[in-house]
Image (cartoon, rainbow, N blue to C red):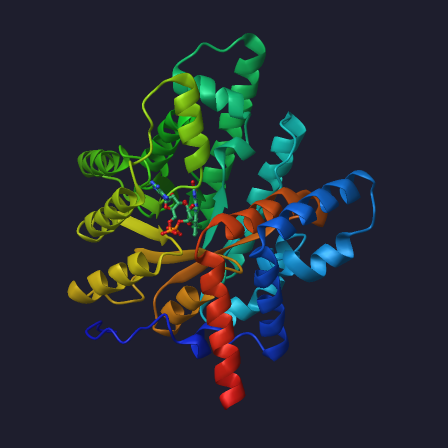
Length: 394
Ligand SMILES: Cc1cc2nc3c(=O)[nH]c(=O)nc-3n(C[C@H](O)[C@H](O)[C@H](O)COP(=O)(O)OP(=O)(O)OC[C@H]3O[C@@H](n4cnc5c(N)ncnc54)[C@H](O)[C@@H]3O)c2cc1C
């Protein structure tokens, strides 16, 4: 399809909430209203912490409320089945095992098993176009930190490190064998150098014919635009495909606090405008080098999403060009996802899954983030209200 005219609008709430009947819309309204109140989120967090400690049966309540808004299901299969509504509207599912397991070999092996399961599911259905994992989900965070700092490992750590790399190799090999691209999430700067080295090595090995391994670049870091350009140069020189997920970054406060505490320069951009500038510059860089770069624009930011749409129009790139994907999180910014998909763009949503008790930390974070992300909940609420009004008028 030739991409000549941009008629897309994120204000189209009819398209945005097409998958939600009146009851589901009302429920979403109620949930966002709840998380918009910081004091309520605080109380709910303490109440669930206590209930979980006392083994009170709160699963049913959680599952019917916040869980169903932000989480796909308790197992990969359940999450895949529950997201048929995404598939019906042309939106892909990225199954994300969101259990922050124990930092032990058993926990890492369990994550590995789940990630391999998602790769197998993805190979069987076009509805799951990507899989994902976090480096710290398959190996001890402390070892990533040591690897990043170039510190020597003791004998026990060496065994754990080898096991970590073996897990990652088996994921990458399965992904390549099944032709399923896999996203590797980015985390805190003090563990990321080690992860960067690992991802680069995987890209040289597995991205020679297709984009299998996707790196993640957090554009709130002031060094990432230059890093993107270096990666591109290397990919050109060595002849592999550079695949990247561009995000702004999720650990800003933590990064700033640590830098201040330890007295090293803040790795984060000086302000939001600088992050936005580099995020958009990265989009432009990627789209200008599509012969070598495949990328995903992971954001809930309307301007950046529209910026990419405009760039695709300018460069006459078809919306369904598989080298470009848009991505959001399940339960959030449906007005972006559904409107993009309705205009033929490639869109996928991270769909977290895991047993209710074990995804609680993820859920609490989502609730807190929605409370603290000024504007985000307000925006969700006002879009839902607009759609309710539109339906009443009809
Ligand atoms: C599909 C997807 C995948 C993701 N994967 C990852 C991942 O692997 N790793 C990861 O870290 N995060 C990841 N995220 C989260 C992401 O990094 C952002 O935290 C989140 O999406 C909010 O940014 P935004 O672009 O959507 O929205 P916006 O509201 O436009 O931006 C908010 C972001 O801007 C930045 N920012 C805010 N204030 C300032 C300031 N004063 N100075 C500098 N920068 C500022 C912060 O990064 C903040 O999160 C992912 C998000 C999505 C949608």
